[in-house]
Amino acid sequence: MTSDIRLAFAHPEARAEASAPADPRDRISLRDHVVAVEIGAFQAERGQTQRVRFNVVLEVRPHPAPLEDDVDRILSYDRITEAIAAELATARLNLLETLAERIAERILQEPQAMRVFVRVEKLDRGPGALGVEIVRNRAAQPLRALDAAGLEQAVHPLVVYLDNAMVDAPDLAARLDGLQAQGLPVILCVGLPPQPVAETGHRAVQRRIDLLAIEQNAWRLAARDPRCVVVSSRTEIDWAMKQGQMIVWAPSKLVLDATDGPNASARDGVALALWLAEHVAAARLLVPEGVAVPLGSHVPQDVLPR
Image 1 (cartoon, rainbow, N blue to C red):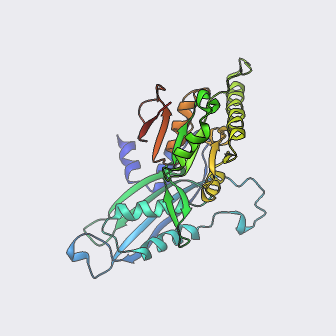
Image 2: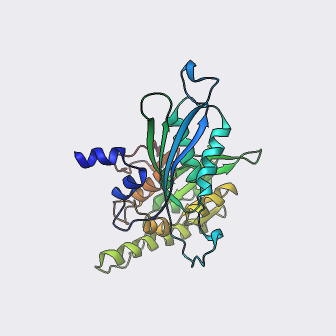
Image 3: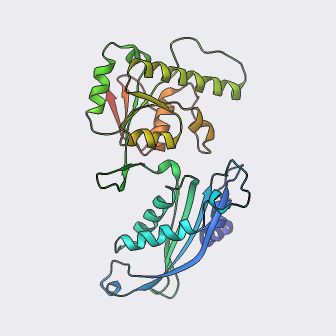
């Protein structure tokens, strides 16, 4: 209990450290950044500014190349203060919760950003600091697309699991037409291919083999329709979506790189599709009629008629 209370009021950096995985990420932080802001839902808070304090801890993906003491190779601290300034300049807000959410979402658009702790506190509304703290990770962030004005907007795609019968069906093109007609970006997922997969008896090796087998099946699907483009990374998914392409997911990179990867077997294509749907904040997950989906997900699910 004492430890829990200590962490509850500790700087977000201590909370990040306490909840870090066995192989913790690098962290950068902003402490006690105070800005005069007009914010608040009460009438007394309108028309005047009050001091708001920001504490942010950002967990980042290590840079794969040598830094060589080059500032252009790291995520600058300025990106955190710029995110705060940008959100404060966008609109007057009533809630600290809204401000914290928007700051976290903006920061997580940075390619290196993986998880962010944001604490926002009002310093002038009472005898102490009144605030909110949130934790958000990259997996929960929606994909981004450009609208007609060239501005980025959040996009929640349609994630679709196709079993092998659907991949091989003569009406595949018509089915893809119907999915595109729904007006959302489409990410297609598949499971293991029809042919047997090599067995090794080694758990870690088998996981990689199973994921590669699914990727082979993804390429098999792509070969059946010229609209289908196989992609493996979050960046590729973003780019393909912006190009209006029909996306087929190759799971190895995202699954193996994730610290919060799927708990299910790599052979469970439906569970992988559900995990991806959560990872990209999908609007819906569609699965073939009669296919069971693991319980406990917040992603809406629909049946894909056979």
